[in-house]
Length: 265
Image (cartoon, rainbow, N blue to C red; front, side, top):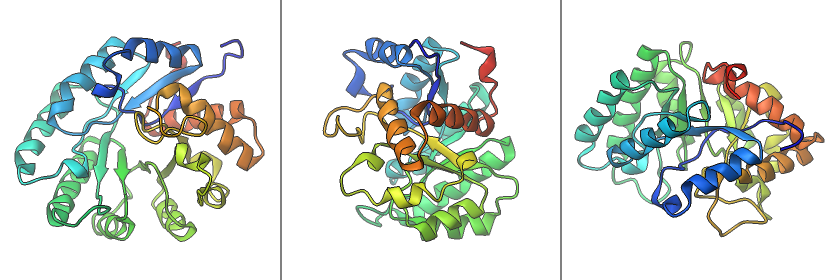
């Protein structure tokens, strides 16, 4: 990339089977496009190995998180948590993620999701690590738990934010950052007004690949190189160019995840 602009994809599941046929080519495409920092959130015990394998293959570019995704919280959640916890002392990670509550489809495991979220928030506090929060149809429940546990010693990001302006204000009140992805490019998205209310120093961009590909790739497999479309759209909303959004969000990611990006190309 001739401009030398560095883009950061703050949330991508590049270790999943969706990329099995061309993973290295896809990552090279991202690196060539200037996407030099990619943060990898975990899902469950089956993704731990692939996640760390990928991070190990791209040191300085792919950064691992660890956590149990709320949609992976089932009747065996205690066993899953033990496997997740065992990684916290054996691997270097940059965050607890992705963690949270998801009530989009049903509330069958709501109590278990709350318990698992509470436990993982406790781990983050003890380890002084930021959290990456999944909050689909669950802002009220998440805000309640954050209030209960306190956030003076907790940093994080609300990933794939799709809330209202009021929910944004509440999320920002905890000192957290806000992750915006390809949803902002969708024709009927209500995110434009919300994006205008996010302080620049609290803004992150992400792909959530392989999900939520931005326009003009909507409906296709998402990948980290598509973060450029997200940056361009956010820049359009804020009257900034994509390169400015890249600089701002890369700096914000470095602050949140406590990384010195100057030390690696």
